[in-house]
Length: 178
Image (cartoon, rainbow, N blue to C red; front, side):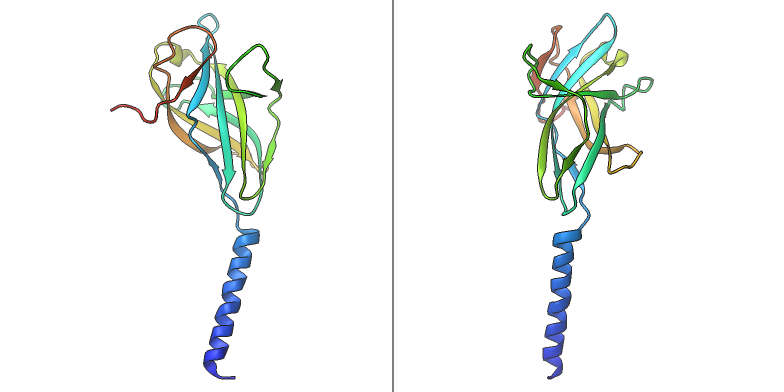
């Protein structure tokens, strides 16, 4: 066996080992797409806000990810208020009297797959009640047994169109005007 045959065989073995590792063991990262729609309600009497988002989670690697908890934060305005807590998983985005609500239970996302949930968040939003507009919004999660919160999506939420009381669905425009 000459040196070139040995080099080709060794390179092939190394390449196949890397491909196998990438396919089976590459750690996953969790991605969350920016929601294009949302449902929002605010209560002037007790300062509560309700936000329902269609969340589409996807993983980039082979390993599954367990999403244990989720919350929404408005970092630029809610400096004295806690983030909105994950209150329920619903069966639809548009709030109706026929909604099926379930507790916010952990869920698993298999490797290289996606999962959609309709998550409802609730909290005190005194700063948001003072005026409508664009708000920088972060979706944070706790996953795989870790206690720290990790930002998985950072986007602008268009609350300028929220002009009537009640729980209504709105389209989140593509980008914040300058």
